[in-house]
Amino acid sequence: MTTLVLVLGDQLSPTVAALRAANRTDAVVLIAEVAAEAGYVRHHKKKLAFVFAAMRHHAAALTADGWRVDYVRLDDPENRDSLTAEASRAGARHRATRVLATHAGEWRVADAVERWAADAGVPVEILEDDRFICPRARFDAWAAGRKQLRLETFYREMRRETGLLMNGDRPIGGRWNFDADNRKPAAGGPRFPHPPRCDPDPVTDQVLALVENRFADHPGALHPFWFPVTRDQAGRAADHFFAHTLAHFGDFQDAMLRGEPFLAHSVLSIALNVGLLDPLDLCRRAEAAYHAGTAPLNAVEGFIRQILGWREFVRGLYWRDMPGYRDRNALGATRPLPDFYWTADTDMACVREVVGQTMAEAYAHHIQRLMVTGTFALLAGIDPIAVHEWYLAVYADAYEWVELPNTLGMSQFADGGVVASKPYAASGAYINRMSDYCRSCAYDVRARTGPRACPFNPLYWDFLVRHRGRLARNPRLGPVYRTWDRMAEDSRAAALAAAAALLARLDGGGRV
Ligand code: FAD
Ligand code: DLZ
Ligand code: SF4
Image (tube, rainbow, N blue to C red; front, side, top):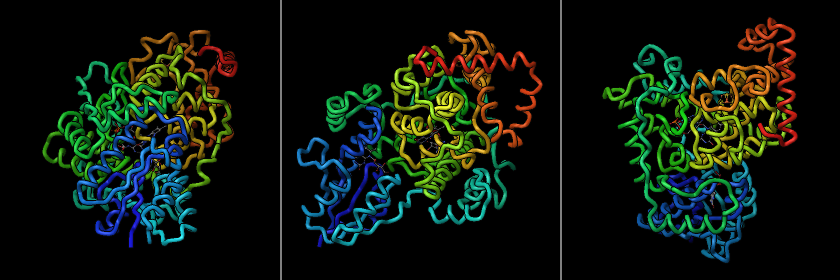
């Protein structure tokens, strides 16, 4: 009797459901590097290196912990290139009499595993992935019958259920949300500590050589590679964040600064999303920092809201609304993704900085993703699937369950308002307020028209006019439309003409 335990590349927790249900005495754990997962989008080289290095280290840790692990390398000549083909091959190799799997994090993989399981020839048990704070059924029960799903309502319920930052039934500090305090620009702020750099060991060095050889045509810089790839390293990165950075997290949460990719962000999502860290544990540690007086409430509440609120909320939505969710395109956007999303070759300093940093680090923080590359794509009407595939490829923390609702929903409004109550459309003024990018830009952030006008300005008005039929009824956008209507006729015409010229340049492959 042999049980085959499937462990996928983002299931690198020693207590993942399938391992908990198995027994070291009769189990073989299959971990497989496969071309299909490496290539379903053109993943950034650092992301590939991270996933493979973390998988190899996890296999070694499980072996040390007494598990029999069958690790299939990408360069194994027998490798059959897909997770299900490797599961079949391993099933036959080990004469498996049953298979245990933890539900995959992406619909695409979950569907393939389910279809494979139906005729695997042996019983296949697919267990819920319980490494989240809110079980899927709990989210569905919360969502059932609600006309609108709003983060704030869900988040409050999660606060009550976990007791995080609660004083009985009341939120500590008397408010649920300290977002309004979290909008300081970073220029002139404190020095922001760099997240700790983990030097590659020989295992990671081998992976780096593999990625260098096999994925030379994938985007992004492989070196320097410094991400944590073991639980110990991820734990140390978290320790560093709680000791040195969390206290500033709130104040500068929305800020952007040239040459400062990380500011006061934790950069923990990369390790968290493969299971090297635990979400509830991170929330409890943040709460403990508040009680110990080492971080203020606005920072701690902001951090907890991202994990307990947003991360759980988007995951619940993803599973509730897939597979149809991926095809949504409420604003009918069809333009191809401009090349500068890959090359950073643009005169827009903000986009250049964020794409350049993304290609270097496979990381950008939330506001960079949302309000720079995201907002530009939204205003320019880029096909949401192209935008989605870009985010999925270039960020080391990107898995569809978290990336898709953030990109297609929050950032591109392609779900018509499920994740976000209004589109994150903004003119250049927002970027200018929250960053120092505009100071080094070829464009003038204050100009609305003319050759030097910041592209975000005419595109912002053009976007609102293009989608007036759908958006004017949104109470939060009413005042914006009233401002537009009050503008002089010639100013409005000039803004629309500037937008048309810009979009024509974009379509013609001209420089923007
Ligand atoms: P911090 O700012 O330190 O936040 C702490 C933690 O909160 C993060 O580690 C993350 O786990 C969680 N978190 C914060 N915001 C969100 C959010 N909106 N949704 C879910 N979790 C959140 N996050 C991903 O993990 N993977 C993605 O593929 C991803 N794609 C995104 C695409 C777009 C267009 C946008 C706007 C956001 C996306 N996010 C994604 C959310 C967010 O940008 C990242 O979680 C965050 O930037 C990760 O960096 P950090 O660890 O330094 O986060
Ligand atoms: C992201 C990724 C990559 C690049 N490679 C692998 C792999 O070779 N083997 C594997 O099991 N998982 C990989 N992953 C993670 C999977 O894509 C992930 O399990 C799915 O996104 C489903 O959550
Ligand atoms: Fe970006 Fe416009 Fe500022 Fe240039 S002026 S950095 S394009 S917001």
